[in-house]
Image (cartoon, rainbow, N blue to C red; front, side, top):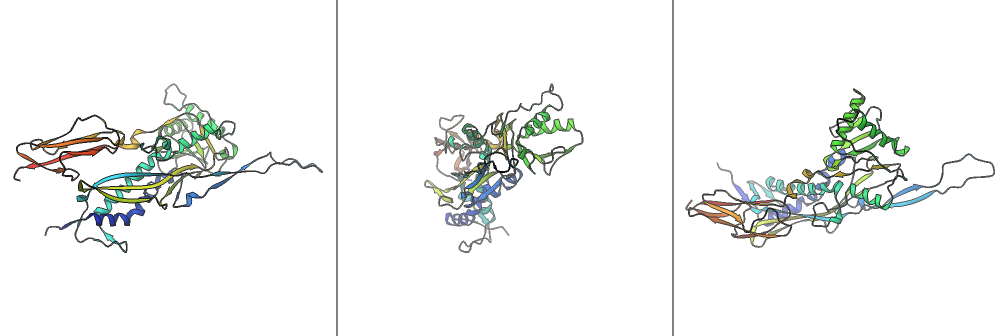
Length: 417
């Protein structure tokens, strides 16, 4: 007996999207949870991040020997506010209504939040996964001054926050939260221990309170971690103690210090040392602007657009030398982390060139975000045009470039088939 399939309507897809919307909005936090945990970054969701953290800055000298009849006065200190600023961002995903086909029996009841539509759920959850990936790309290199047209302009990432504070003078050598180091290299001319010795010099430059903290996380690029660890192992063969997983490392002679690396940190020699959860990621899914909406293309009812929008941001809670220290040098983003959307290309092809061809009018190697382009499917004498691979049947067809690589195939079939 053949399986029966049912195609969902726009109303069905919208109802299921509304049911799954809370999960989609939370996806940047829970899909990337293992990465935030590995990097010891605290995740604040809902409205919790709106709480302004008050940091106490001690002021005055150390306690002095008591001299009868005379007490040395000193100021208690001052309070500093630390807010986590979030920025609203959105992504627009395109999908074909014909993709939402369920094997019977299935159900979407909606009113009580129950459903049984595994294919459709998979598609909608992957929209959330794509949004989560875009949000993660900004964690270190995001710079909201790049503007809403840039995939790296969602919010200020860690390195942007650090550079802003260096410019403002709140991170400096004088405050013991900035150290100049030499780059870590693979040069054969380096002594076996040189990279490790440079790392030790970085550690010894920290404020004593940070250096002696129970747990210090040092963020570094994967290549820098490898260079430091290799140098350390050559210096102290057999005295290494890797922690769980492959992205962190602890030292036998400095057990409180953990090297943590990830592709999101970039490529280069820059180091950042701090206590766990001093860096925070905030995700606001509860404000009036947070939503997941579904609409369709007016010229083709099969084309659906899913827009996901919420607000997120980063903050370094305390940059005082007692809890934080960063080096000079520069880390650059690993391009592969962003995926192929950096290649602004549109590819058009045919499923069978003997039945027809497809081409873009005045084709170019790359297109700008928002640029319109037309494409035409031309059947041969033996073929007939059926549809485009995304289900659209308009021919010729005009699309607006989304800023990410797009692929379209013209589907032809033999005449009379």
